[in-house]
Image (cartoon, rainbow, N blue to C red; front, top):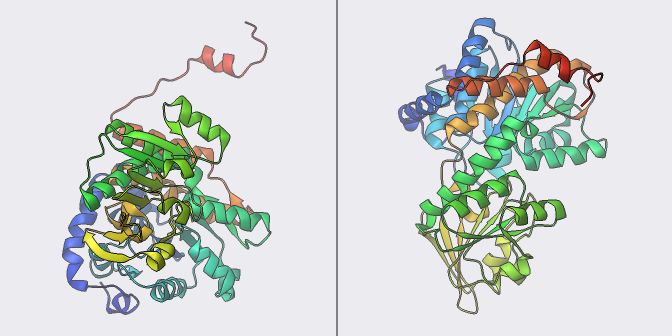
Length: 425
C-alpha cells in the first residue's frame, strides 16, 4: 500500500487490516463468478485510466467487487452507503492491504457520512456506482461541477432505482444510470434469497427470539418482502403481509399469507419487518396498539420506514443497547418496543448482510455492466436504463456452472419451431 492511498482515506482503525484481509478472502471463495471476471479483467485491463467513485455497503463482498475492478486497471474511491453497514476491518484491509481509497467508518454521523461521499467524489470520477442514490443526488445538488465529467453509472438497490426513475421522469438526471437492481439474477437472488435470510439472521443476533410460533408482520411484498415472508414461514411463524398494491397482495394471499392493513396487524404481531422503500410505514398509530415486547426491524434501504423520531421523542424511557444493536423504548402505556439497528438496514446493521454466494451474482452484474458502459455510455441518453439481457443471462450461466448444473440445448428442429409462425397446432 502506498502512503498516498492511506492519506486519501478515512477509516476507523488501520490495525484491523489483517483480520479484514482474511474475511475478504473468505468471501471471495464463495464468489466464483466474480473471481472468473476478475481473472479476465486482470489480463485485459478494460478499466485502465478509468476513475470510479462508489457509494456502497463497505462489506467483504463489496471489497471483492472493488478488487475485480482494480485488477481491471480502475482507480477507485469507495465510501459507505449506510453508516451502520461498514465493516471497519474490511475498510482497513482495502486501504492497507490492497491500496484502495476508502472513506467509511461504522456508526459515523450524518455530517461525516456526506463528508465521505464528497471525498469519494474528489477523484473526479468518469463512472459512479451507487446504492441508494445518495452519491448521484450529491452530484446533482452540491457537486454539480463534476457532472460534465460523468459518463454513466450503476445503481444497486430498489430504493435507488425508485429515486432515479423519478429523476428521469422529471428530466433531472444528467447522465445515463443502469438499473443493475432490476436484473433477474440480482432481484431474484439478492433481494429474495439474500434479504430473506439475512434479515431474519439480524433478528436472531439482535434478540435471540424464537420465530416458530410467532406472528411476523411483513410490510411490503416485493422481492424482498417475498423472501422475508418465505423464510419466516419456513421457520414456523404465522406471517401477515401488509400491502398497498392489489396484485402483490393477491400474490401473498395465494401463497398462503394473511393480508391485513397495518392498523389491524399492529395489534397482533410479534415481529414487524418493513421492506417497502417508503416512509412512516410503522408510526404512532401503530406503536400505540403493539404488544409488550414487539420487535421492529427495517430492511428497506433508508431509516425512514419506522418513525424512530417519534419513539425517541415520546417514549417514557429508552434503554439503549439492551442487546446487540437493540434499543428498548418503554412507551407511556408501559409496553416495551424493541428496535433493531436504530431502524436502519437491519440485515447489515445487526448482521453481515447477504451471504457472499448471493452477492456473487449482484456484483458480477455490476462488473460486467461497468465494462459494457465503457463503450455504450456515449450512445445512451441521460436517464435510467436496463442492463442488457445478455449480461444477465451470462451471469446466470456462469453461476450454474459453478454450482455443477448443466442446461439443455435446443435441437435444430426446436429452434426452427420456436422461430417460425408457420407451424400449426
